[in-house]
Image (cartoon, rainbow, N blue to C red; front, side, top):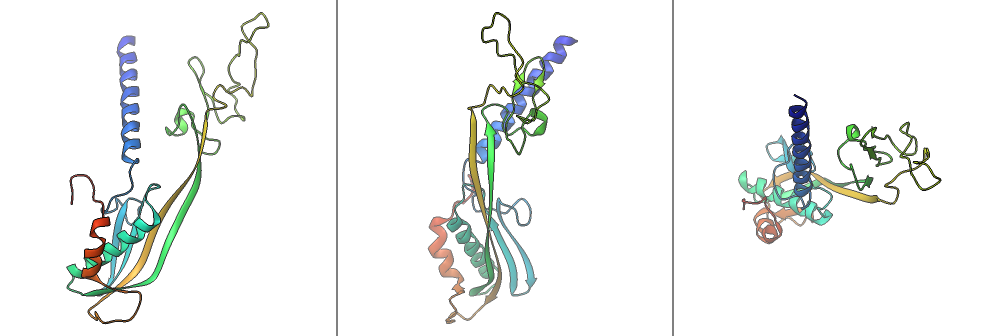
Length: 217
């Protein structure tokens, strides 16, 4: 029975590492042109019809998606919706681009696995001892650190501020953009309003800049 439990624990650990690797791979590219997983999400476009000729459209991208790309994808989605509904033009109203910026502090070991694995979202790192488990957020830890064992004729000494990964810290600023606009569809292709676009021309001119999910086009 102990061997079975140990094997199951090891397998669960391997599955967790594999899932984390897949997540990192999925986040390693800019957000493609695709429906968002939830309204207003940072992984694609979403829309809501307000009237028969008016909609609210949003496109959000991950931290690798440029602001220009987010804005172009919103324009492209507005043009698609206009053509799908039999309109020739669309006008952007109350247009806005939201910038979401935060600082991520992560360690060389244990990063990205949440509080249960010793990761603290504020200080961003902690460390692991095979006998004592994960520490808490250094330097306010009750764990107490490792025994250094640097001479003195004995195994080591207690140091509450010692962190073996002290120099293994990665600090990054992460920025995501989300463009939102109310869009009014119309048929006046001769409009002089700079916020009014010819839908078919937008589709033609931006098509080369649109990246779809793998396997779709």
